[in-house]
Length: 448
Image 1 (cartoon, rainbow, N blue to C red):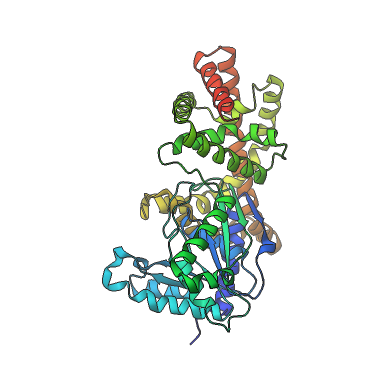
Image 2 (tube, rainbow, N blue to C red; image 1 turned 135 degrees about the vertical axis):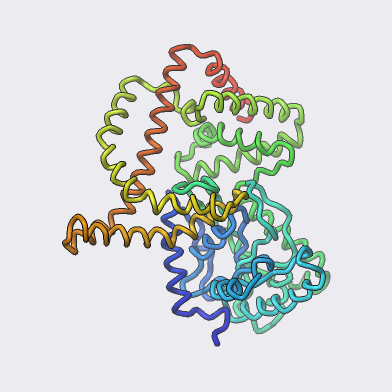
């Protein structure tokens, strides 16, 4: 019987397939700091946690080859024999919480012993240090379990090389939509051995010290909109001011550097909220009014950011969309079922209400429905339309790229409609649009 840390052929096959599809779920898959992950060391990956299973798969996608990552997950999902078998295959161990009953908390000792053994085998653990998931883009307090395991493993003098905690900041372009970006920002390893002398003298003090270090690292690696009362204001301000900050700092206007600019805006907002309460209240009012005007006129901040579109550019865009419409139609027809059935299942079968689970449920469903429907559609194509094997093979492999193109075309079409509407509103000198433009500029000035 294999151990949970063994890298079996079946696990390798499934993991490689899931990671392959995971990277294609996002429009941009960006990894920064891969060099910070050492090979063949006992590692504890510690990511921020806002997107359910997708956070764990993100860690799997950066882990060293043939080093499985064993995750801890809440114990209540281990609710039947089938679930236990699947979770064990996926290399997931239960972590018991107060809500699971006081009588079950003692079971954590056995789980933690398994975690220590995993690290002694130079394998990797994945532990969400916040202890739970939150869909807001902000860090929550870190729980002690990760540090208890790290210190227990490092106390064994035979552990060579030393146990390392790898902080991982994950940023999503959107928590629910397909085709957005993901940034996996890997920090420098935290050497647990550096805290062992302090731990021997005062375990509580050492735990607080290393916890503070990990929190600081995660804060620097992720987007932390650290506000209890003005979170929506922070979100809106970050969206409005990002391009201005990118230009101000002199960075390239790429996805990663836009993320860095959002981090700087977030830090500035935290400072304003702490030092200038009246200013943050005014900013909050402006953000609410700006959001209301955009929603009422069915506009997006990006359209206002780009300025008034020229008529000639709109005409060129309309011809591009018209010329490429057949490719969109083909992509839509080939991909309607694979793309929309996972969404249908999530909404109407699973009836998920928590947005933090949306993309995870759709992704897990999609890794089954996509190959299944592509294969069925290819068989139908071969039998009903063109019975040549190499043509059918081409058809099999072009379905997904055309599906991606259909999504891109749809985005461009929506953007074209928004630009056209923006131009018409400007020609009419809409008072609401002018008010929105003024509010946008005030937001930028207040935070710049």
